[in-house]
Length: 208
View (cartoon, helix red, strand yellow):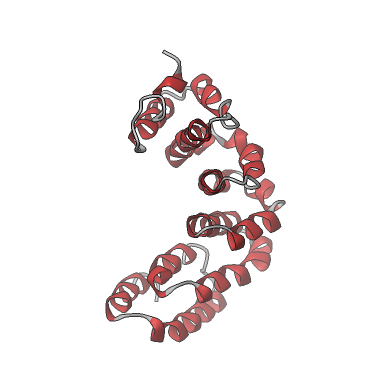
C-alpha cells in the first residue's frame, strides 16, 4: 500500500488522526522513503491532499525533526502560499526543526518575522515559537530578535498572554532580560482577569 493512501483525505476521515498515525509509523521506523513520498505531494493540485501531507510531516517533526530537516527550504517557500493552511502548517514544521537549523533559518529571519506578524493567529503562535528556538542560546541572534519577541508579548490578547509568556520564557535568561520581561508583565497584568492572573503566577513561580 502506498503511503499517500493512508492520509486522512484518501481514508475519507475528516480529522487529523490518520495523519498522526501515519506520522507515528514513519517516525518510529525512520522511514525516509515513506517521508519522501509524502513530501512529494506538498504541491498537489488537491489542497486537501497537500495539507494532509504537510500535517504528516510536521507530526513527524514533533518527535523526529531530523527526519524532515532536509525539507527546510520547502517549508520556507510555502510560507508564501496563498493558502492559510499551508502557511501555518509550514510554520509548525519550521518550529520543530529550528533547533537543528538555527544558522540557516536565521538567514531568513526577516521573512519569518514578517509572516509571523501578518499571518493568522495560529501562524503567529508557531512563528513566535520558531523565532524563540532560532535565537535561543545565541547572543548575536538574541540581539536581533529579543525586541520583536517582547513586542509580541506586549501586543497579544489577554486570553493568549499566559501561553505567550510561557513560550518566551524559554529564551529569557540573563538578569537584564528577566528584569525587562518582569516589567513588561507587571504593566500587562492590569488587563488580565482573575483566572488569567492565577495562571500567570503559577508560570512565573518557576522563574522569579
